[in-house]
Length: 140
Ligand code: HEC
Image 1: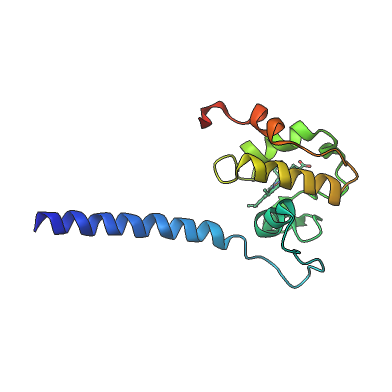
Image 2 (image 1 turned 45 degrees about the horizontal axis):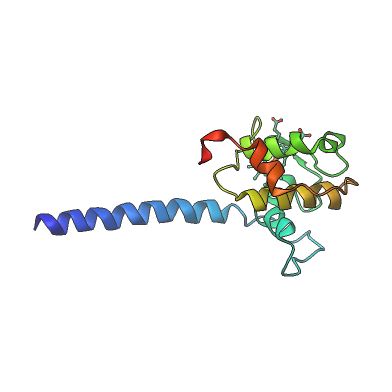
């Protein structure tokens, strides 16, 4: 009998964690009507952008002004500083969540590279080593 209760408890705990994970995933479902570009099954950085960042920063990275202000990432001179952008993505800033726990260093490097080169003219790629250098130390 006791064992059953423990087992049921474990199942519920699992469901709870699962529900959180599902919610996090669901945030990626944003406005799909205005996007011209399709994810052409490859570029990891673009995929991360479309699934996560676009929800707030919009399809063309134009940002939005509504319940809160989300800055544009397109033509944003602050992104000239790649380290600053990586740090922002890893640790969050103001109303933006931190992504250090949610994305792998590869995904952070890819999405930073994508946003800087696709919506801006900063062509130098951000590497996984850059991200690891800036990542919060508690990770390992
Ligand atoms: C939940 C909404 C939300 C999501 C998701 C989000 N951001 Fe943001 N982002 C914000 C807000 C709000 C700010 C402004 C923060 C502040 O300065 O107060 C911001 C700021 C930024 C900035 C700094 C821009 C500037 O000019 O100050 C960068 C860079 C950025 N976000 C990149 C990203 C990337 C890349 C992703 C996807 C991995 C992402 N964001 C996902 C809401 C979001």
